[in-house]
Image (tube, rainbow, N blue to C red; front, side, top):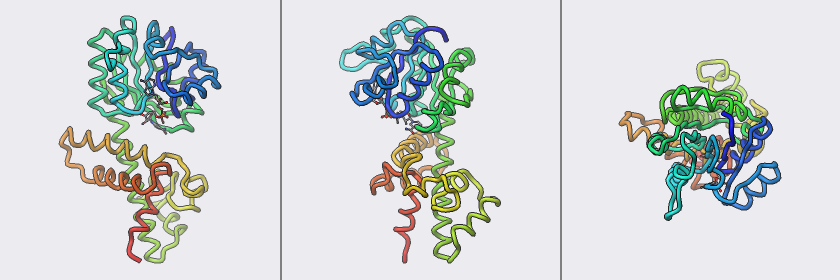
Length: 302
Ligand code: NAD
């Protein structure tokens, strides 16, 4: 995609992602309303606009990396009588949303963009701040094949895997399904370690068996919730994230919305969502989501 990329939302993820686009030779103009984000962007050499509309006017791609679907829809349509991005962008602009939002909100955003004469792609990411900085993110993409082809090089400048998942909203669908597996499996692994402790089984013994048996999964062998078996897992650094509890709780709420919207008879995802909400209420928001093992241990009978 030749032409300027308007990059809206220069927070923990957006800041380093925009910096990687510049490194790859793209012309970027950024905007964020928060002074701390603006300062960090300036330190990264990201050119800034005074308003979101100023950034979007004349851009070939309008990329959003915002906290929630509400922020994306409000930015697209405008709030408080202010013109939205869909109104100020030139005809046939590519609206590329990389935020993690509800599947239904992504479909609504795409329909609004298309109705305004634009193109739309949802491309949520996994890989966290570390992946954003190292340009190793995975992008899960929903949208038309030809729009996917035109944003692929832009996404490849910020990530290492770019997967076309299907129509509008299906990037978000892939993200919520993956994170529902992750949230549930981390609780399962944590419960097993605490049960092992009560039964007198060492962490090492359980790990040596399960890591090479049918209990093997990412939550066990990469992000192991107990210190020791996997030296790089957050448990070894007092559960510093990693992937923060607040973000897992957010992603599981999106999964539950999708479960309710589709009427799927899912029990584990909604249960995991309640468990992480409680983890967040009890101080887990800023710690790695694997810290949920401590809540399970604390709530167990002695
Ligand atoms: P963040 O809060 O650090 O950044 C969001 C930024 O958007 C903020 O700086 C905010 O000021 C800005 N913003 C809000 N409204 C705006 C507007 N109208 N125009 C321009 N900027 C606006 O959040 P983050 O951690 O960077 O996450 C961004 C998105 O990525 C979220 O949807 C999150 O769920 C998702 N995500 C985050 C991670 C992670 O590890 N942090 C991983 C994967 C996905």
